Image (cartoon, rainbow, N blue to C red; front, side, top):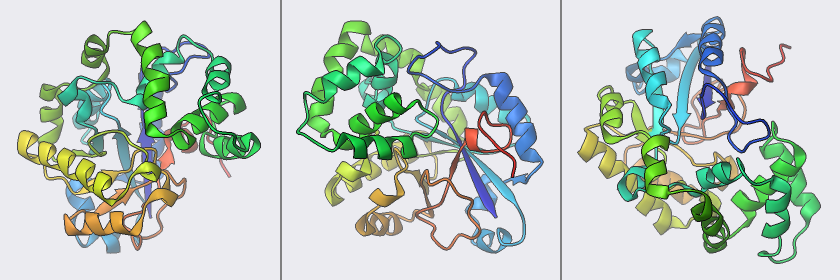
Length: 303
């Protein structure tokens, strides 16, 4: 069995009711101890070995993943390295290359200052009429640890808003609050940090830009995959064979996306469908838990 555990923000403190939510470094260390009790942390070389599909049938393995290439992940990398634990770090090199903040993070940062209620009320004026009860239902399911209004707004923005409207809606608010180039330096891993993580092939693909697969066609997916792939391999010398899909929606993974991954020698694709992997039969739609779902997590409930 393979259990994949994903992390995003790991910081010393957070604003109450802010847009950035996560765990502290001490909570992270405690969760590693708890996860170690239920399985063995898999090494990268084990994971990509063809025999691992057989090993996973007879033993419980844990894979740690970190999405978005956030600055705090370098501290985590060093902690795990000192404890002989491998983890995969999935980056969008758009952030470093173009000195831009991903829209998903712009939204988190704006919500540190503006309420979800106000943002939701304004966003619906940008969009055609839709079934808001349905939006709320899907939002609560996808963002299960957020308050209903927050979940509804995040789902409306991330999954129901066309890309060009997202840019228009978010950029003015963001630019009024932040200096983007300065923020990038403090918010994301820099090249030296990426290079150190990449030495053990632990930097992997999250697409060039953090885009929702639901809004991508064959050409756009290929372009974003290969651009990030080439940068990771050529600039950092890291063998790139695993993708973590931005937003993790398994329903958005089209057949032709999987064919592109196969053609480019990708071994695995990782979603955010919250289940264990009893086998590796569906290698391009692996299940993954949010860290809060698992032992040591804030919302874990033992059966």
